Image 1 (spheres, rainbow, N blue to C red):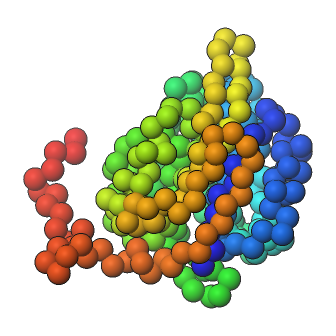
Image 2: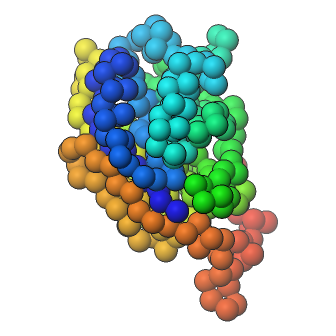
Length: 268
């Protein structure tokens, strides 16, 4: 199946402009799965919690989920995209998964980075894995984590232990480490990973953050199949076979998960 990432530079809080840019970037793209960045329509560096909360919306009955569903119908692809979520009086940094038939599920970011802790609650949905279908009718398992979750190996491992073949990773990366680390996350869990980052800079009036681009797709052997530059719009699509993630044998005597010895691990 064909999977890819979308890298671009959203205009802060210019949602309609950003929708138009993303729709244009995906014009004519053929894919089964496309991953968009974290907070992909709003931008990232909010000046206050009030500003972040005003941009938030409900999932699945908010306008972004509806717009993404229309975009999915146009492209034929499953879409994974980040947005600020409002659930009653609670606010989350979330990612929604939609297909041509609509909402599939969503994830709320567990590991909040920097000033996200001022605006959002810690995610309370765990690390979900969704069974989805590509355009040929083949099913595969899709896990989701967001940006700073990569820093915690337990996140990707939890998804892999639930059978994820592919991990979608919407991001707004500012630290330089992630493009070096994601091949390891893919290798140590024997999964495909798709990191969709943004580029450009944003200021909240007190400081400026610069985003590093370099979106990338990795295979279960830790090889980079596609990578975007540090700066510039990019839509990269590659052919993968999700079944390759299901054979976790390393040698004839070793299996990545069967050889785990959790009774010896100190995890808390």
